[in-house]
Image 1 (cartoon, rainbow, N blue to C red):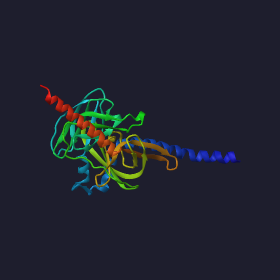
Image 2: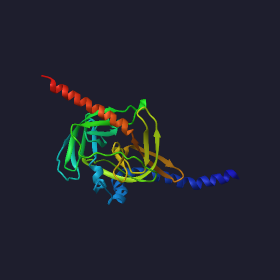
Image 3: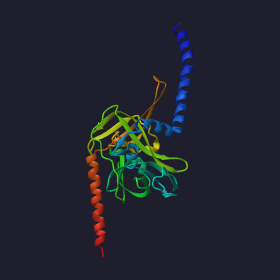
Image 4: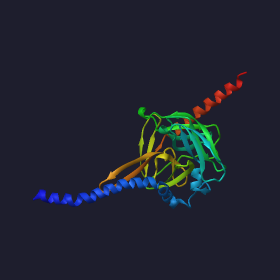
Length: 289
């Protein structure tokens, strides 16, 4: 009797479950195809938000860059006020990611995984015009040794706009992210998107407390290394990746993004040490006959 009842339940429930699972899988493909629309929609609640006296999206874009690794870059045109920049890449396999301006002396934060292969180029619009800047790798964390999952890049140019670090955050607060939007025609622009902070975890390390921020903003792979900020434009961390799992309770995929926040004091000391080394090297070169 029990076996008969179970057999009937399986025959009734299995087809809808399979349909739901297939729909979720296909939905993942649709998600990839409509990421630009999803990101634009997620940012819509913040369209009238301002930071530093300007629209929040502008504030964030002026402090964000596109990182191109493993290829040489040539810009077809650079015009002030242009919404996208056409690029030509020459290399065996270019990687595109985001980068976040953190120090006016020319320093950016990005993910460690994005800089495994050079050369490195940063493309950004600082509000005056587009800049295509060769970047020097200053430091890259070795995750296998427990080091932070980030890297530091330097460009030989002072930065007009950089992020300040947020000093506090809370669950469910609105957050805004930015990353690369590099389509098949290599038209570059920085995309912005919104979500909510889900939770954060703090882990002790040799470099000081490290914070992982989990949030719901629609991050896609090209956005890693881009900033995650509060609605006042203060930096919470840099986006790393997304965690995707299937919920049998909801019969759909649940996606959570991760952003990493290194210890700001440790990061500043690393940048100060590099800047001083470069000054000393330049002075030594200038003293040579």
